Length: 242
Image 1 (cartoon, rainbow, N blue to C red):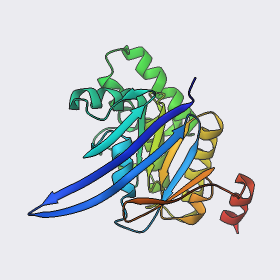
Image 2 (image 1 turned 90 degrees about the vertical axis):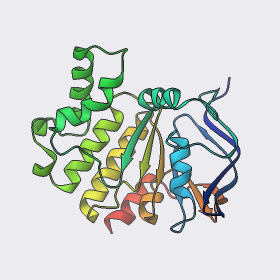
Image 3 (image 1 turned 120 degrees about the horizontal axis):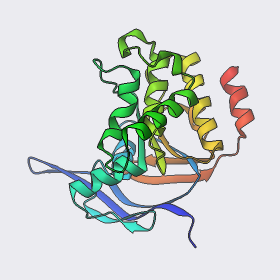
C-alpha cells in the first residue's frame, strides 16, 4: 500500500499573454508522502508559488498528471476542485487573508460552512479545538484589526487546520512577521508536523526552510535539488535563537 499523498508526473505550466509563452513549470516530477514536512525554495519568479497553487488545486497544469491520495485530479471540474480543497487542503498565506468584518471564530469557521457533511455544532467544536491548538481561544470574539500580525497568522493557522485537512500548504507564512512572531509560527508548524500533519511550505527564509525535514529548490521552473535536511529540528531552533 502506497504512503504517497502527492504524486506529480511531468507537470508543465505555461502562461500565455499576447503571443508570449511563459513556462512557469517545466517537467516537474515529485512525490510527497503522508506526514512529510517539505520546504520549497528558490528566487522570485522561479515557479515555487505556481507549484504550490497547483498542489492546492487553485490552478491546473497545462501538461502532466497530478495524483492526490491516489486519485487523479489533473483534469477535474472547478466544482470538484473546490470540494477537494475544502476538505483535504488547509492554506496559510503570507498576507493572512482574514476577513476584517468577521470576528476570529467566524473567520476560522468560514471554510467549514461550505461543508455539507458538518452540522453547526460540529463546526463550532472544530473551531474551538483549532483555536485551543494555536493558543488563541481568548481572542475568539476579537476582530482582525484588534490583533497583532503574529496573532493574525495564528488565526490563519487555526483556519487552515480546523477542517482536519490531509495537508497544509503554507506560502511564505512568516513573510509579514518580525523575527519573534515568525519563530512562534514556525514552532507551531513544528508541533502540527509532530502530530502527523503533512506540510508543504514555500519560503525565502533559509532558517525556516531548515526546520523542514526535506528541502526542494526550484530554478527556472525546474527542480534542481531535492534532499533530506541535514540539520535536526533542535539545531535549526538553535540557529533561529542565535
